[in-house]
Length: 280
Image 1 (spheres, rainbow, N blue to C red):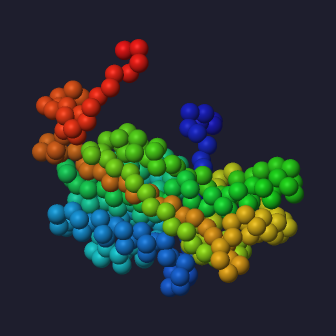
Image 2 (image 1 turned 90 degrees about the horizontal axis):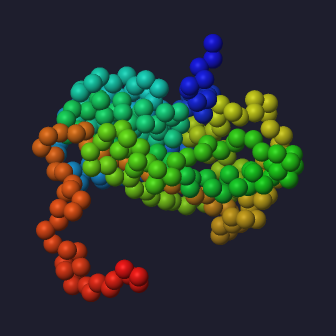
């Protein structure tokens, strides 16, 4: 019997594992530069927290890389059910894998349950502006050649939605912020090759299983070069990384003030004049 209450899976986990396994050999090269950028940002954020973490854990699809980033941490794969013990960690990092989750809130809830009271969660994932150029070029090329569209680039969440997910998962003091970076490539072909080397190839469950015609990618590369040029005859690609921060609830945490409980008006504090709205 088919479970009609559960939405269809977005990710083909078998294909995703295969893509990541193929990428493993490229980790010594430059293909992991986005993981390196994310790791540097995570370290910077941890350095700003006045606390020493003694029981960290990392959720990721690239265990070897992240084990070196945080030596001694428990490293577990980003499977739908995380291999984390409840109340076992004072720090949990979800490292560049949450964008592939069919149930991102479920992943966040499991991370929260793995934290001790007042433990810190840090997540990093690709955001909705990532690969906007490639998405557009592939879509235009496919419509021009076939008259239709098929899933080729993973849909990714917008930053405005992710803060709400953190609240739904039960984190205290949740924050979502992002950083963008532009990368130049010799061509769209080089970009797509780099994505495969990162383990970020197409693992969508709804993707076509038959190989795409080479003419499609040639046409996409041509359109990409015309629409998104970079100096020196190269092309640009945009990546957005979104960082999520939250704390496991604890009784002694700072609490936001109740609405209407302020002792001083904002206009008075700013020395500003107030003007009534017309008709009020």
